Image 1 (tube, helix red, strand yellow):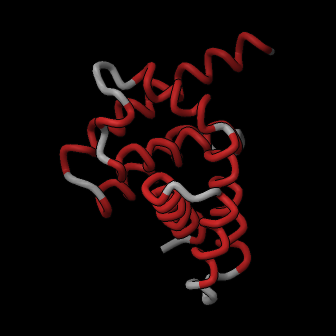
Image 2 (cartoon, rainbow, N blue to C red):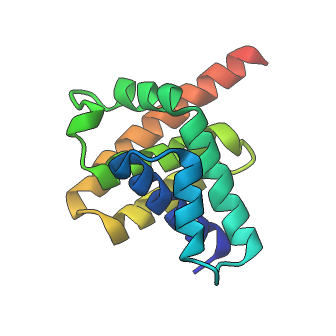
Length: 142
C-alpha cells in the first residue's frame, strides 16, 4: 500500500475517533499516534494535514457534503461513509495539486475496505459532485 493511501486511511480513523468520541482534535492526535509509533514521518504528516483541514474546516466541509448528498442528512449517514467523505473533501480543499479523480478513486478504495458495497456508489456520487462544484468555484475566481 502506498504512503498516501495509508495516510488517508489513518486520517479516516482519526476522523472516526473524533466524530464518535467527541474529543478535541488535539486529544485525538495524542491518543491516536501514541498507539502507532511505527508509522513513518511522511505518512503521519500527510494524515495529520488532511485531519487538520477536515477538523478546522468541518462546518464548510459538512455543508458541501450535505448540499451534494441529496436527501441525506450528515447524522443519518453511516459514520464511516461520513468520514470517508470528509477525508476526500478535506483533500480537495487542502491539496489542490492532487487531481480530483485520484482523490475520488482513493476514497472509493478506502470505502471498499471499511464500508459496505452500497456505500461506494454513494461516496462516488457525492465526491464527484463536490469536486465539480469546487472546480467551478475555483475557475470563477481565476
